[in-house]
Each structure stands twice: as C-alpha cells, then as structure tokens.
Length: 286
Length: 286
Image (cartoon, rainbow over all chains, first blue to last red; front, side, top):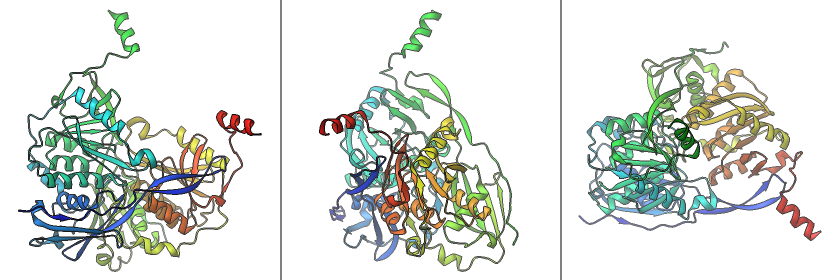
C-alpha cells in the first residue's frame, strides 16, 4: 500500500508584538503563532484544532490515529492542508465506519488536555501490551534531558508552547512544539505511523508538560514503554502508567528526577554523588 | 428566585505515593488527586470532567454558564455531587432548550484548554461590553502577585495543578486550584454567579497558566476587564483581548510584567527603579 499523499503546508511560527513593560516602556517581543485548523474527513467536518502550525499534516494523521478513528495510515489516501482557509481535507480510501457514533462521546480531560477524546480510550488500555524488555539507562536519561536543553526552539524565542520529543534510546528522532501539547504528541504519533517503525523497544517519549492520563495512554498506544517529563504527574496518569506497565519519570532536570512507576525499567548506571549535606550526614554517622 | 441547592461534597485533594529518586532511593511524595465527574442534566449525560475535586458544585455551575448552556443560576434548582459514583446530578427548573444541538459542535482549544467548547464562543465576543472605567494600579498588581506567592496551596505541597484567583482590586476573594485550569476558571465563574455580584468594575482575574483565547473569552464573559498571568499569552488570546478591550498582563512575577493589550487600563503608580545596567547606560548618555 502506498503511503498517503501529504501536502507540506508552512506558516510562520512566531509573531512580533509590541508590549508595555513595568517601566512603562514599549518593547517588541515574539509570541507563538496560533491558528485554527478545521479537519474535514471525506468532506464532512470533524473537529477544529488550535495549533502552532509546524506540521499540520502529521498532526491530523496522528489525531485520527490517537482518536482511534483509523487503525492505520493505509486507510488514508491524502491529507491536504490549506492555511489560507484554515482547513485540512482528509480523503480516506474506504470511508470511516460509524464516524457519527464514534465521535459522539465527550470527555473533557485534565489541563493541557485535548478536551474531547472521542470514544472510550480508557476501555482500551487493558489490551495494550508493552514490550517487557524495554529499559532505559540513567545515563541515557541524562543524555535525553541534555539534548532537550540544547534544542533551539520556539519556546526559547517566544515561550508559551509545549514540546514533545521522540528518542531512540538517547538519540533524538523528532522534536515537536505546539501551543497545545496534545497536538505535539499527536504529531509524533502521525510521524511514527508514516515511518512504519514496528520496533518500539528503544523508543522513549519526552514531554515538557505534565504526565496526565491522556499523555500516558497515548504513549502506551504508540507502544512506548518509557516516558519522561520535565513536570510532574497527575493521579490518573500514575494509575494508568502503573496498569499498563509503563515507566513514568517526572521532574527530570539536570541530574534530578523521580521515577513514579515501574522502576525496574530504569537501570541506575549513573547514580550522582550525594549532595554535600547528605555527605556530611553520612560522615557524622559513620 | 431562591439560589439553587448545592451539596458540599468533599474528597482528599492529594495522595501520597512512593517514588524512586536519582539515587535509587525510595521516597514518599504527594501528588494532586484527579477524579472523573460525570455531569447529568435532568438525568441526561452531558460530559465527564477530570478534576481535583475541591469545589465540584461551583465547577459544574460555572461549566454550564461558561458553555452558555444556561444564562443564569436561576435556571438551576439543584446540583448534587456524589463522589462515591463520580456523578454530578443537575436539576433544572424548566429544562435546557435544544441541548442536543447546542452541544454538538466541537472545538479542541489550545493546551490546558477545555477541549470541548460547545457552540461558538468566538461569535459571541463582539457583543461583550467591558466597563470602560476599569483600571488597575501597578501597586495593586504587585499586591496581587504577592498575595498569590504567599498562598498555601496544593501546588506547594503536590505540584502539577493550575491556580486561578479572583480579586476585588487587590483583595483576594477566591483562590481555586485544579488539575485543569479550565476547571479553575469555571469554578470561579460558578462562585461569582452565586454571589450575584453585578459590579465587576473592580474585579481582576489571575491565572498561573497561559492566556489562551479561551481564558480571555471566559474572563470577558464574567465582565472582568483585567487579567493577570504568571505565564505568557498565545496569539489568539492576544487577538481576543485586543478586540474586547481587555487588559492582558503576563509574565507577572516579583516586580516584572508585560502588558500585552490596552495598557491605558494600567496606571503606572509604582514604576521600579531601573536595573543597575540601565542606570549606567542612562548616566553615560546624560
């Protein structure tokens, strides 16, 4: 089956605006762009996504996959994005069965969440099998955190965006920013599906945002067994990670992190020396 | 018309969990609670909200108001929340007209956004009239930022929540945290409606999250003309604030801030002294 035909629509990712600072002075800063993209599937309006607009075709593909409206890229003939009219036109090969019913159930997920998750993603998680032998070494985790730190980004120039990234062990494969991080993870899912990589054993998913249930479920759906976040975790994110066998790591900055679930997937090959205070305590009790 | 009858359902806001840190040590931390609350209106299922659960009745009321499903609290007879079953049962006095149609349009808004905004909120914004004489003094802005800094909070103990607050000038009236900040702002809207305060001239809305279009629209709908954020602004947030006459202030920490729109609403009565470098530049050119 040939891959779907995708346009490569591009648009500016930042906009310069004038602001007033605390001294009453006018200054110029950059803010991230934000545009609405209405998705049509076989000419039927499905949803409007608010996005930075870096990779709209991968975003739409990943959205359809993560919402379980399609099972594979093979079902898609083309995705045509036109920023002039803010539309993404999806042409399927054989239509989507029961699309009306399958998009009728609404769940408003937690913050930064893609509010409308169609269907019952939670019902699906028990069928997910993550590779048992997927592990990450602590030294690789530190390399991942450092790679993100060095990345030139819209965040550095304009702030107010979330980033997600996909790593193969500690090698960066794709870095995606968006005004909504749900879009960033969907974009990565779209890209992964096009790559048709069936071996997810070495894949690590990184996000600057919190590990909500939605982020954990989407990672598990992509077959990724280790997720890393600069932020923390919510209770449902933790519950889902525990249940599907996913290693969730948060608060990952510099040499610090917290492993919330399945620590057996993390090989501690680079334990940092204790902090001075801890060393003193150790010395005084030895 | 009597106020609606509300339960006062309570549930723990944090949960203690065991994690593994970078030294391979087990430690106990707190994470925010997160529970699903399915809203039924006159026994018909409407939506499931993921929430911290601090003020579920105000949340549901504010949600119905902000989604424009009801125009006033008078339409509600009671809201009964039962955490045992994760349900909020809303009883209206006379039903909600055309609820099926009005909840059918989906927009997935930007990050941290309440994904499903029913209806066309954007169509409404041009009808909003914000009080022309609402201004905030810089000294009051600093008092607001300081009041938030001193607040004991779930964020301080467990992280991973957003906070919103409502001020009367610089006096804190209500402080709300939630795993999704859309919930926090809806909770404030519900509380405001119960208070039946018709004078919004002195109201200031504070949020730790970004000023997305959704946050700006909801503030404007509440009649609040000044919003303050610890974070930045998105392009659509800025566009909407510009259009409705709302003063949007971001990056507000310590004495620093950026005023993105309508700076005439901000009275600069407490301009901080220039930084040492700027003083030197000023001295060398004078």
